[in-house]
Image 1 (cartoon, helix red, strand yellow):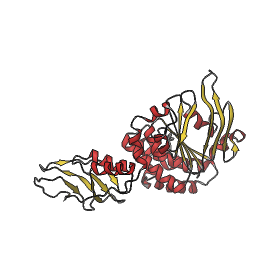
Image 2 (image 1 turned 180 degrees about the horizontal axis):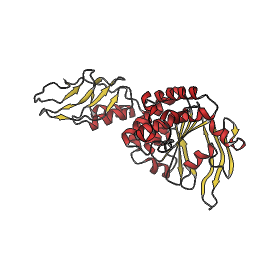
Image 3 (image 1 turned 180 degrees about the vertical axis):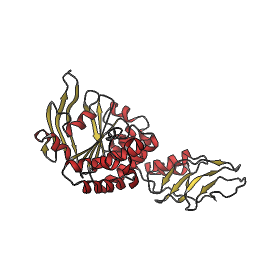
Image 4 (image 1 turned 45 degrees about the vertical axis):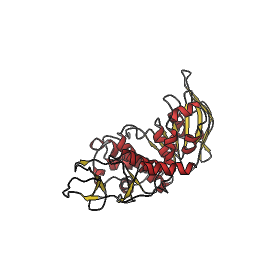
Length: 349
């Protein structure tokens, strides 16, 4: 558990970065700090591992005041992930990940073995361990950064805008990977972002901070969207917060229907219907329009996932049919936006 007790940070130029912060991060959860530039979210994060010391107030980790712990000792028990990974360019990927275990006294063999295990854990092939950071994509570098932060198995993980430097598609994949890892590892994570969509997706609780270092609201994402504390939070979350809140409503009740399919690579002729192209494993690949032209597909959604995903799939589909898949990515059926909206309306009634 991480606790901020009336924590304030004023810099020498008179700027107040954090003002009277009272907040508890429960053990084994992800808490996200979000807000505009200059609101104190990164300063708050860095006070946990004493990269910055508070002007007043107390920061505790597992009930222990961090001000009484030697900073290097404290940081060995706290993983830290930053933008663009911060990897050592002159070391291989494997040696980057092994850095902290070596510093804590592990043998080189044991540290490298742990590093190899972690590369697999974060979804990287073993052969990448022999490469240098410059030989990796941005997304791969961020995965290595996460692996390095986990190398000594710290109970606490601090993540300072870790995915902001990669493109949106890679970013979404990294967010999914973080959630998968957290389900497996159960760390206490503080995550900083300026992106409310990322905060809502990743956080179990979200702390919205305003300029001047004040905490505006601290709540689960669904509550933040449906009951913003004030006009500032409502404006920051966005006018489409009702739509965003659908991310926390499951898609049960949305019945999928069958759809005509065409095997990938098979010859096609014009038809009165749209047909879905599937590969040999029944995974959707795109659409065949009535005039027999090939059209890229819209987004997919997994059966049982949020109703927002079902609506997104239907609205983004060129055929007007949202494609549902099972947990293995295989075709389960299709839905229309009207079906999804009818289910939403029935629940409100």
